[in-house]
Length: 323
Image (cartoon, rainbow, N blue to C red; front, side, top):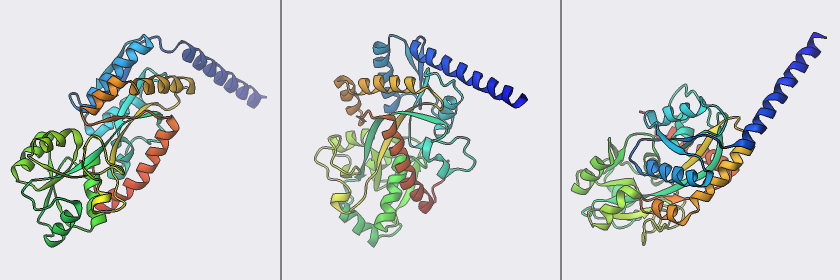
């Protein structure tokens, strides 16, 4: 009898929670929504603010951006998973939050269990750039030079464990070359040393690299995407110019906390995809080296699982650790 009463109370509580969820979803949104994003001032921060502006107009509620950009995404993702699953806190972040577990011990979240995917929001390829005095004009020539000078060429990069770092390590693994990584704290420092010839090459974001390429201070050898990109016009892919099968890109997803009602996830997906498909936002993103996407939650989940399978192996083989 006691067991039956306990089960009845549990069922009643579950139905009450379900009912409250339905009511909340029907009234959604009726207060300010915040987008958790990375460091202030960068292209992704600009993207978050542009999305917030579009959502504010479409939803009739204020949408604000809250920057939580330190610790490689740890602070941002933990801010999200501690929030109520009511659709009023969402996260825009890149692959660090689902690849961190391969680079550090005791990561306090599970990207599949603790996050509710909303949409694949943004993607961007990387570009292989070299100093103009380096005697190479193709990826094939770069690989040949690196093989004749093992350990002599330097690859400039920002930090450790980010998407451009992993692209460089995948390149070295696939090409079988020994190129020494030189880490930098900022893109400005990286580009200054690269354009002055202190280091020879880099796998860079398109936004950081293209002003130097257009001015002639650096040479673009290839873009890392599977297909040529309008972000790097006239530049072939790595795969087509010397390293078949190579592909790398940064992807950024939008997430809600786990257990957010499906009706709210669907509403957020609909509205965010609508904003990402607006011509003025696409142009704004394109001008800083990004491409707006917009997908279903299921497509984002599939992209994350594919990323984890591919880059988890690269991280292990290259011995990449978070810093």
